[in-house]
Picture 1 (tube, rainbow, N blue to C red):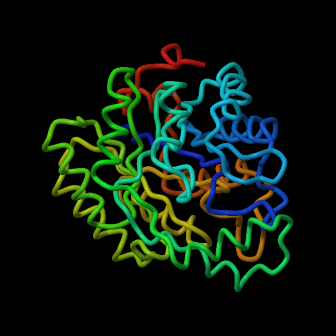
Picture 2 (cartoon, rainbow, N blue to C red):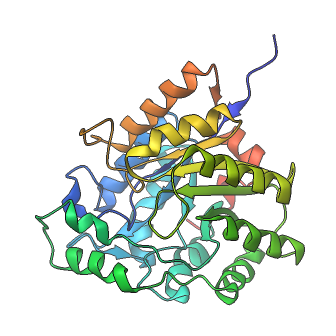
Length: 310
């Protein structure tokens, strides 16, 4: 009987998509983020994707000091791959967004592959009670803002991190972003294996229909052949159905409270680990095995946990 392939589970522990008031389970403080990341790895995630937040009001922050409060502890307590955001929030400059990856030199960092209308304002129709004044203001501001990721910005991040061996989770929110990535491959600024995270369900990006998922994979197959590792991120309530489609089609999966607050219809996820366990049940049903952190390192050609700056 042929050996089952291994599926990489990424868990996006906390981020700027959801605001603290929307779920009491969203980790905000350094200790909460640490415990959430450790729990996700213990549940089966090979990679934890991390943002930081101001511990007072939960506002997204790229202050490196805030990242230092949890990344070292997570490294000590788990063998998980630590993936730091360069996305931050769309209100930040690219220089500000880069600092955690630049200074901490992680094995993996996220990189958004194109500018887009990253619209979160529809959440205002679903949520009425906010803990902090910045939360509804931030959501409303996305009605008239662009999340900037120009070719100059992307090249700046790639060149800034080129000498310390950090590889990237290339976040592609639409078909054009795959072509943007191919442009940088053609220029020799990135080399395989590419870790391509296709993102579905953000207003301003591609939708969540099964045809959208299949189209993104067909395009990536044509552009990158066998030089890429495919993963999917489904935002909101379609997180698990899109993960299931990806896994069945040979892909990898990303879950976590950054991408969805839910663990079933009308049920808030009690933790990031709960979502990891749920997606593991889907993988088990497909007779697929999950990749360990070291197996993920091998698949993605990462530099290893001992070669980071934290």
